[in-house]
Every structure is written in C-alpha cells, then in structure tokens.
Length: 186
Image 1 (cartoon, rainbow, N blue to C red):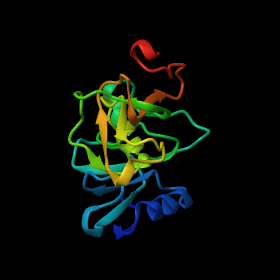
Image 2: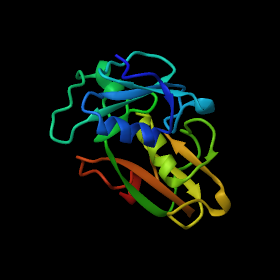
Image 3: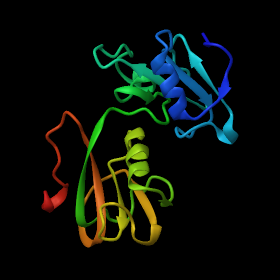
C-alpha cells in the first residue's frame, strides 16, 4: 500500500506530505528511533495502515474529528498514538499524557529504565510517554527546563519524591485527575 516510491526525507517532511495527501494513512521507516530513519534511509508513505511487530517506526494519521479505529487492548497498542500524526510502533506509541514538574524532588535510586542519558526534557517526555512502564523522569539541577551542565536524565518505572536539588517530571494521563506525587508528599 505504498504511495509512490520510498524517499529520503525527515519525519517532519513526511508528516507534512502525508497530511496534504488525502489518500495517505501514515508512513513508516526502518529503525527504532522515532526521530527518523538511521543513516537518512527512506520513508514510505502508506495508503493503508496496519501494524506488525518489527524494528520499524510507523506514524499514523489520526483525524481530530474521528474515533480512533485501533483495536482495543494490547493488540491495538502499537497503532494508538497522539492526535495528528503520531508514532505508532510498540516502541514509541503511547496514550496522550500531561506532565507535572516537581522542583526540589528526586525520584530515588532504583527502578531505572535503562541507563541515564543526556537528552532534552522534551525528548525525555516523548521517550517516557512511549514506554508504558515509565512513570516519570528525574535529573539533577533546579531548572525545570533541563539538567545542569547538560547532565543525564533518568527515566523511571516508579515515582516517589525525596527532597533534593533535582527536578522530576511525573507522567499523568491527560484524562486523569492524578497529578500528586506518591508517598507522604502527595
């Protein structure tokens, strides 16, 4: 169901081209990085959308005025995403989330998801939102815009808050009232 030949382009360009084409249902590319294909590889615009388990990233066009047509439950998790064109692979798809920042709060050691990595707060939000096990992230410093000296950000599978010169963000489902920290602070 390819629309034309696969072409090298950015994810943003693929979003624009798919949005402008009424026959386009999404696009896909090889790799696991939602920011784009490795080594500038090609992106395939698609006239139909179906998810399969593979080391590919897929974005699905979701119209703001329509119901999401993904299957319910875990079998549909790979194709559910945020409004507009959203990542659809199981590595990057996630329900829409809001974020609550807690200054002077560190998520304690343990429950790390992978190694701490240098990234922006926005990238940490995207990566945490894409991981169903991620409850939040934390970094050293006092500026909620990012870690001091470009230091690493830790994604976390649990959320608790201890007093420290750190900032933590908690993932909150957009339809949830839950925005209080865990433990005695909440």
